[in-house]
Image (cartoon, rainbow, N blue to C red; front, side, top):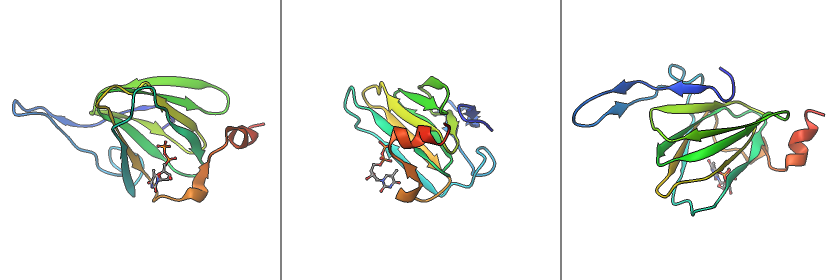
Amino acid sequence: MNTGDKVDFPIIHDPRGNLTFIEGEKHIPFNISRVYYLYDVPGGAERGGHAHYDLEQVIIAMSGSFDLILDNGFKKTRIHLNRSYYGIYVGSMIWREMDNFSSGACCMVLASKRYDEKDYIREYEDFIKQFR
Ligand code: TYD
């Protein structure tokens, strides 16, 4: 699986409401060690703005919508997310930003590792140095 790939999750359609599930190492290519989510994001706010040496993630718009900007050091791609039945895979060494959050948006992130500040690259200059 490559960064930016859309991952479609199973949907159990039901007149009582639809159901989606995600199993680690089955629907996404890693075991889920951590789940975190962004919500109550004020209009105009930006999140992300970092890369990870090692972490893999799948990013899902659980409600509302937002844009995910992925930068592999050479090319930037903007992806609009607005459904809870698919996610976007983000591998290691990718600079990511999120903006354009709608009101009520909830961004859920499935992560391959537990939180580790040492895995972050927080300065864009340090990120881009890895490719030049
Ligand atoms: P950060 O990853 O910088 O947020 P963003 O979503 O904008 O990229 O995290 C913000 C703060 O939250 C930072 O102080 C670290 C803390 N944090 C944790 O303690 N555990 C986590 O799993 C995450 C994602 C963040």
